[in-house]
Length: 146
Ligand code: DQA
Image 1 (cartoon, helix red, strand yellow):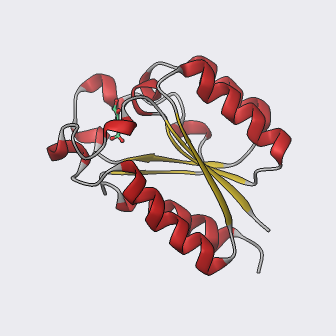
Image 2: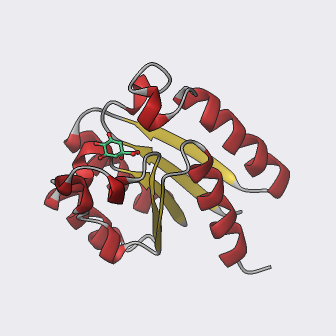
């Protein structure tokens, strides 16, 4: 069974209440519940982690390798623009991942237009609010051997 880990970085636990104009009205659990429904319907094993701490995100990526995770859906949030260490973790484990952003980062402040992950991601989905995670899951489904 294909295993997928959804990794969400800092402040994404506040989705729904946090800047809804940028990030949408839906809470993280609502988005994850929808992903879980698709995973159940398509026979994927889906797990999710959210942390506000860089080291915990790195630990989760390292653990994913030990657990045999096949794909990661990653929203590094603010660490997108700063974290060499989280990038190094993804390079170390070599698990293919899709970078997701709820907001259209390329249309925002210049510092948000720099990603430490985009060049090593399978692809980047940005600007579709919570739907972006579903699009990432669909992209993974399209790439799994039948
Ligand atoms: C974000 C974009 C980041 O710039 C920001 O720091 C976030 C969320 C997004 O999903 O749009 O926290 O990753």
